[in-house]
Length: 291
Image (cartoon, rainbow, N blue to C red):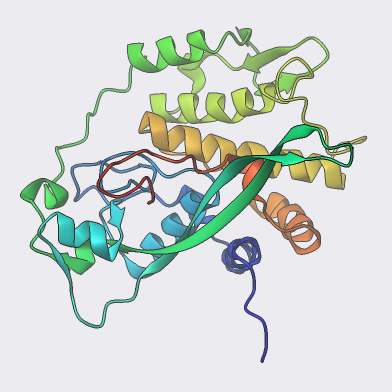
């Protein structure tokens, strides 16, 4: 019997398929018909956002199946809330990763602490597949804010990162040796979302500095494999960040060229949870902390 691909391979294959069709799943905004807004990380039943590879999987499922709500829950969670998954509905897989800690005896008979990572796969359903849930799970959206001036909330967020953000010129980039983010003047962007989405991309690059995440894919020259890997991390990291900040990711003019690089990277090295963040346990006495 053929072995089923592991969850990371499934995520990678989904991203590759989307890229081959010219689609970046993580750039698909949520439909404005739901209260959660146009751009949102997938949410658990209790409003806590999913993390890691689960974000990509559920975003892709929502786009493919045209769900407008970002909220997902297990069959038992739906029942606990008074809902019922409609007959014949197909769920989506999510992963729950954590670590067990135990004490064992080493070869000398001494007690040592041992950490054992583990992962479980669960099936969740979108609230649009469930009847009988409380009304707020299906609440309509509020009209979008047309204001395109600087956003005090976003300004405060990016200031709080501690990144050295400079303005001037006509390029956006992160200079790792001098450790600063360079942005064109705010007024040169077509709207505020474009500015903050671009800033999110460059600040994600900023996290690679040796004093922070110390991320190095062996990049040596512009456009090599290491460069492509870093750009893919910045793209996905910025997409997650934009979802949390409720802004629409900016589409790059060099879209097609980057897709070619990303496809090559993904075909040689599958997505791993550690690259995008692990889904942490959320302690819930009713649902035992699982999705």
